[in-house]
Picture (tube, rainbow, N blue to C red):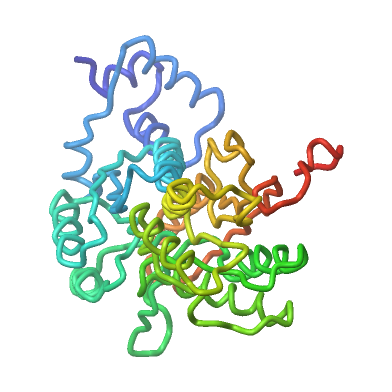
Length: 347
């Protein structure tokens, strides 16, 4: 197996120069860098990651703890994390906490024991054990998608966080439905305790207020961020003496459940009930009618989380920050509007 010294001899440079090129630790002249890379390719040299980690105390690996990896939204986030990590020369270790606080703490400990340089975590609804572990062991971490209010002794945030905007986009769905004449607009909300759930509820209520509609607590039912929960929540709304005429679902899994509940009752969208969803997904455009939705920049969220974590590793003492990425309103036909594409307007 070729060594770094073999690469140095082939390229006509020092071993230190080869190290700087491969590790990015110091600028190297372009022609010298290219000579090193050519020698690496010609000799088939591969970095001894284990040996390097013993010297640098870094494994160039990132731990990712995200529940419901089967969810298309988190799958796209994973793609963004993986692409950004690979580009930066980091490997990825993945664990699923299953949205269970005790299991969450265990998988984070497992990742930490694998000596990852830092972690990206989508916290559960009760992250106290997670926060205690990360704080006790001073693990560099970025919270993803779901925010955690965890100030330090000085009152400042302790952890970096990356997520999308939640309140304003949800408000837009509500005001759009109200603008179409709906006065009873229901919300199938996510799992209580998650910041995404509370922020989307906030957006729902602000949308009602902006449209001059009263808030009716009977029209807000939790679907616990799952398909089965979304189905049960929608069934509960449809059983009201005066059911809603329009519905906002809080994520893509609950949208599937809502559609199942409507189908089982022989109800159509948007004929019997207008429907809008927070979360777009690949096949939403294939539904009949096509789903009006809020699209989150999921891959960008994953990539930005990696960027923020790497900046934290490079500068451990800088203040923590929260990064919010904008969402897009994708106007289709499940809300009851004519197909925007048929009118020649962008969706």
